[in-house]
Structures are given as C-alpha cells and as structure tokens.
Image (cartoon, rainbow, N blue to C red; front, side):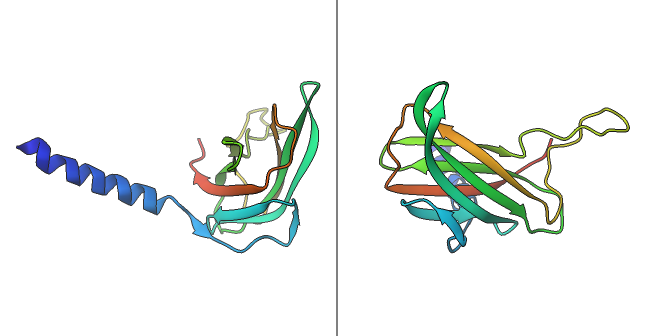
Length: 147
C-alpha cells in the first residue's frame, strides 16, 4: 500500500528536477560559424560569445571539433558544464569549464576551477570517428559546482 503512494511522489519530484534543470533558452550568439541548425539552452549566468564547428584530426584520424567561447556574466565566480549533442549521429561531447584551476605563482597551489565575473574562455571539444559536419545540434550550458 505504501509503495503505491510513494511511486507518484517520486515521479513528481523527478519531473520537477528535470524541468528545473533544463536551463533558459536564449537566442543564438552573434559569432556562430557552423552550418547546423542549433538549439541553445544556456543558464542566465553564462553568455556564449562564439561557436564554431570544423573538420580536424583527433589522434591522427579525421574528426570534427566544436570550439565554444563562454563568458561569466554573473556577479559571482562560476563553473559551467557544456554539452554539445549531435542529434542525427546520437553522439555528444562536452566537459566542465574551466577544466582545471590555475596555479598561484606565490604559493604554488592550484586554485578552484572557476571563471571570475566578466572572464571569458574558449574550449575545444573534438568528436572522434565523425567526419561530416552535423545538420542539427543541441548546445547546453549548465552551472556546475566548483570543488
């Protein structure tokens, strides 16, 4: 009897998490160099300053790569998660931005991997075993807790 009542509550909470984590849909950034149809889901704390897709090599084999420029537009230090979904190929790439913290020159210790307010960074994500530029993409930028 308790299981029957418990299941709808769990499903409802799960739907709230999924709905709350989808991010805010924004218009496309100005500097996009990619022929694909792109859907953007970017949190308000981040701004995509540039996006490019290109043919390249990865581990000496033909591949494609995505270069995304991000800027922290919030008033607090932030760390982001970037996902690029290739919808037709059922593939995805991405990672945390910034990936590592910077080393302090005075103490020699690594700091937290964060972008300061107003700071921009550009990251490149290669997609192995893919040689054709995609026709449709979904780009998601989420907040990620800094360690």
